Image (tube, rainbow, N blue to C red):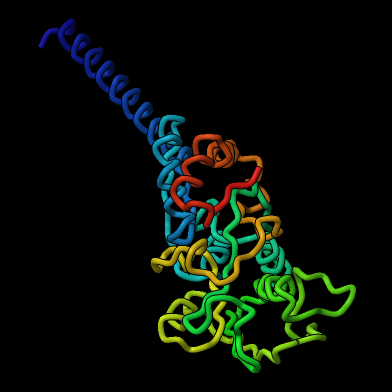
Length: 278
């Protein structure tokens, strides 16, 4: 083979290798870019995951790939966040978040309050709280941060009263000093079981979180015999690891969730059972 042909072949091969390397580098960069724009969020089925599904295409237009993982309890979403399995979660209200951070030493931050789900009291035995019999039973979940919510509803109805100076958000049933109907409280079961207890008519009054109520076909505005006030401090938030509080994808998620369009959609879909906050 002539020397000129050999040189030409070497140059051609070198050019091919260079182009292949450039192409490979570009592909890798694209993959890294796509990976950086994946946002993994854990959520309760209703309404949190449904709200996230609604904003998913909106975020996609912003270049963010929102991936949603649903959970059926109140423990795993925070554990998954702490373990780095997800980037944020959307299922819990502020008092529960604060308690979990304190008890588990989580290094979490509140990235933004999105909505409130008024907790309701339900019954198959009476139509209003005033009709509950003396010695009636009240079933409440073992989520201690919901106890004050239940007590607050009963106190507003004039059935119980807590000690002076007690913060209602941290109140327990031991803080009740007046109990006009001698109500008996049971609070050992998981929140998700409350709708089953209602279906089985296992107590005079049963406290149910609105996400579980809606998920099981209940309309809190129509079916609850008493509903928590919307001025309640129990707003549901986007929780993140503290290091990610200023992450651009997280900030964009919160911005979209608090947008006028999303607020109107939430109000239209749940008719006040889920209420956006400013």
